[in-house]
Amino acid sequence: MTTSSAPIKVEIWSDVQCPWCYIGKRKFEAAVEAFDGDVDVEYRSFELAPDTPVDFEGTAADYLSQRKGLPADQVQTMLDRVTGIAAQVGLDYRFDDVHQTNTVLAHEALHFAKAHGLQVELKERLLLAYFTEGRHLGRAEELADLGADVGLDRDELLAALGDHRHLADVKADVAQATAYGIQGVPFFVFDGRLGVSGAQETATFADVLAKVRDDRVEA
Image: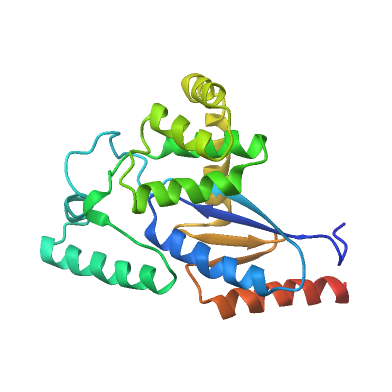
């Protein structure tokens, strides 16, 4: 039983190559900062494109054009729009530098970080690395370096990525997303019972947090 004073648990299904996930993260964080209660965040794995090769040859625009069958100029317009929206929440998207890749290893690294109490920190580091710094998140050595940046043991993380000890955790998250009917990310689940889809405005997240708190009091 969850008490009214216990932290609100928010599980967030997302992918490190999802631009709307980073934008939604910032808007959600603003709501949490203004909320007069405790919130416990846990990131869950979701692979937007599990068939993506580790070393995709081409730009993010090339990838989207091929995957969605859209003309290059239309894709560039889409990326420019997302870049502008990201800037509004303080994010610097540099799609020309992005390394499109398979993200399953990054998700394994996030589960490793979760086991060591640093998942939130690594999530932020990976998103910044991907969208702004042009880092390659499909490579174990790169992920180990980024993990070390937030205080994880580099060698231990590298070993975990090598033996895929957290791959089952990633697949379990994906299976849970399917069970919930999640088809796109970000997707937020509050206290295991209330779902919110997409990079909503901060005010929307604030309203949901308040509702969850008030529902607990009434219960």
